[in-house]
Length: 223
Image (cartoon, rainbow, N blue to C red):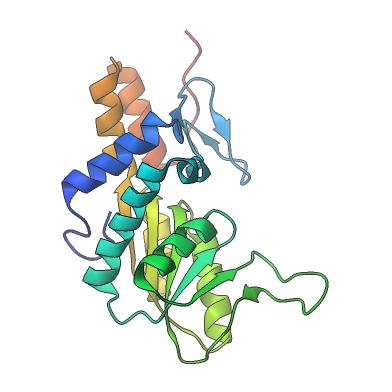
């Protein structure tokens, strides 16, 4: 979960968030009939964090967790920034909790009107925390950080619900000097899945292999 510190959030809460994602089927595993990402990668996991906004108790749980991260690592934050689209509702809830201004960043500028890419009142020099739903390759959060920096906003770091734990994503954040912290991670999800289901050693090995080498991973043969 943490990028460069030993603990970012209590382990009990990390487990609670992982179980909540599984309970509402926001996270699904399918190592045989894999999901295909927009990048073309095949994946044994699919996460749709948007489902969590339909459950008030889970919304509170996620906001509570983000609040813990903000207080621990970014207490000087002056503005909360959501990454479109899944980070927007999470950022709104967090901004309301801390009574802070909010912005959100589009993947690309609008093609009409003022052609904004950042929405909300931009104050150069403000200290910002970016809110993302999932850290996979990390590109959307890193792009948002670049757009904010170009607008004169100082980006403290990123918080997210889940990270898949890819080494190359961590390296990209380190290269940009951008710390990130998450509520739960892929390993914690697997722990919770193994508690619920009888998972074979072959399946377990395949799920771990995907995290190590997602570009080359292949789904298991359908039995």
